[in-house]
Image 1 (cartoon, rainbow, N blue to C red):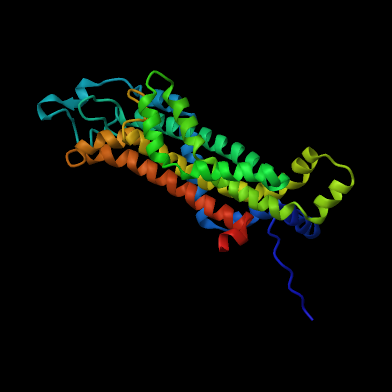
Image 2 (tube, rainbow, N blue to C red; image 1 turned 90 degrees about the horizontal axis):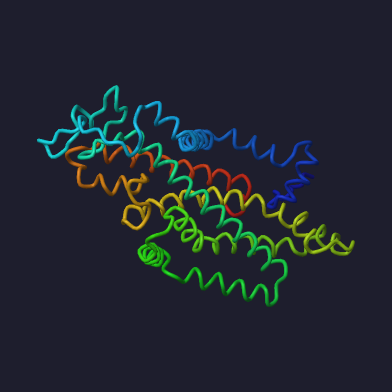
Length: 319
């Protein structure tokens, strides 16, 4: 008679299954990802844009132009400042063309815009994950009044119309570091989602046999949380983190598009898209280049996050 074993749904169970099968759970997850073509392509696109963001100063120097440097000879003053040449002024000097009116190099602004957009997205995601995991683990493990207070705080934060509140805060605060302010404002409203997921996972792990055994053996709460509970929620957190990043990128782009995000001359993709709207019919390349970059980055992170969710949290992916 054949028996059907339940698939492991937590990182702890995956670790036990991996040990029984002769491989670590992370190695098994990596092998599963390698079988997914969409995940590999998405990972390559993510790595490409991350490399572009890190190497933005070097790439702009290779292109020969700074992102805030004007080139009056690249635009025609008699045609309303439109770029000279086809496809938005693409040439050996300007690899992706130039901005209308200003003549600033579009390649330099796009790569520096990637640096700004991804920096804000990654930093805000880090705040969201750290705060969300801490609150979710504390609420799920300790329960009682701690759970009640943290759950009500999650509900209160999620009840705010976050985009409107972000716009108001960004509009009021003027003489501050805009990048730091955007990171803090975006991170402020993002943590309850992951906190709820981690709380649910922690509730399911709190009374597992290995957690009870650690508690009976005299282990401290801190040791139980770090050695037993956190490894059990690591898989879903990794998957959810990858899905948070595209939302953060889109939020930064939306705020910059609305004029309350990063301010000129600091470039960002959302700001460039907003400025290009006035030229979409006369210079479509100015609109297309940052839009395609934003689209590909968000799509790649979304596909990668879906793949990681299916691998690390199959029950959540089927729900």
